[in-house]
Image 1 (cartoon, rainbow, N blue to C red):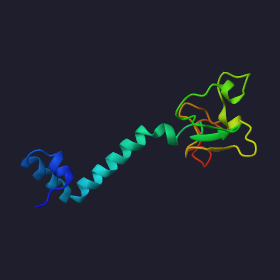
Image 2: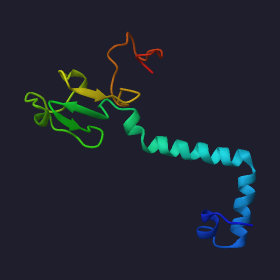
Image 3: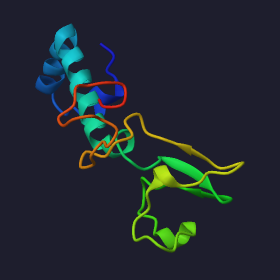
Image 4: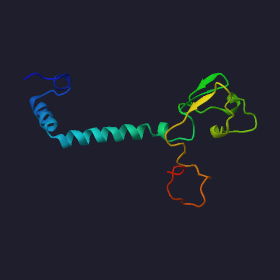
Length: 125
């Protein structure tokens, strides 16, 4: 029987290879492994898809990646603040921003709702 790269290099003995082949035959096991791997990837990248900062933006002719590093307001030309509120930036012609799927930080309050806690809506997930 021809072995794959994984089986020949990672699995060192016959017992490990036999267990791996038995695991691959069970569809539910493989599906569970794929779901587990997907959840691990989503949890490690949660900062990218749920955040109050743009993932990437072009502002005043420069490309910025606010998710990757904290940007000081003076770098963006803001003089009267200590933190950048990216929602209040004035984007002009040629400026753009790619926002994450969920544009709210987990520790941020949504001021666009009537009461707390609010029912889920398109504005308040």
